[in-house]
Length: 369
Ligand code: GLY
Image (tube, rainbow, N blue to C red; front, side, top):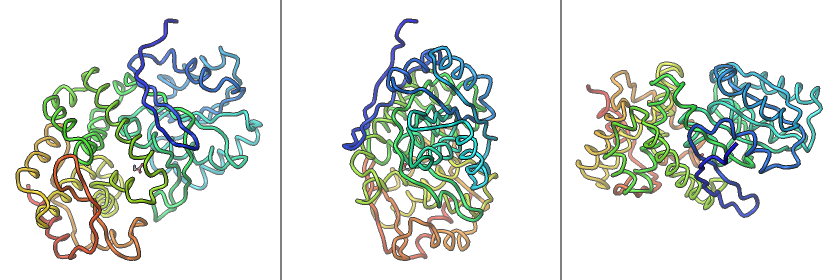
């Protein structure tokens, strides 16, 4: 097969640099790319979301087998409940029975749930074996597959147990997005818009110019949006791999509000990206109240998110319950709430010690229709 046209984004970590390969309609070349990057791979544990079994996972398994790799498959039921201790234990046990060893590679095919679960299994089995991320949702292509965050949930706490475990490569075929339900696709656009706000004003302007083709999943627009998002995420991760300096925390723009929305709404009423979009709007209002941005900033972000088919209001918000949830967030430093807040398009800062009354007021700004 002819070499596919791919864009390569480097994640420049000193201990383990790796590449993100981005293209569209190159699924038939993904297996070869993985074998090319990991020539000593003899065994693959293909962990995949049940929704992508026939469309993406089985064809990839066949490619790898055709290249002489022993392949074992583990199907994971779609949904957050699969990020559990029980499912992880089953995966470890299957890997033991399948004789996974240091030449084995875990290949995660699916969205954030599979990437996080399979990634944590790779981080922990045999004290750590190699991992390849093959994300098939927009959210996982632009965020969760890059940067090495892996983990599972406990019944009352999302992502509370996990490890930083970087993949050896990330292979992205944006054609996988064509099989997603539109709501799931649009939800991923919240993280794309986030990159414009936190780090790249020119990209924000590009998004404004291309919102409709992007929301309609026009291939060239999607490919560009994914590539720029991955570049920004890679740059931030390279500066602060383990989220210790505060730099990586900027990726959480809209997420403190968003997690509180998800937790108080019940995890299935809003998708993660939808909660993040509303959270970004709450954060913008909070920044405006603190004199950091003007009304024009709020209006531009509001318009872009709306044109990307994302919600910016949540009439059911319970500000007191959200505040309580924020205080128990694992990212709260020494009991002090900190927010990622914009000062202009393309720049955000971590801000602490905010009057809770302002936080409530910012939530209330997004309660009306
Ligand atoms: N999703 C935020 C991060 O990877 O740090």
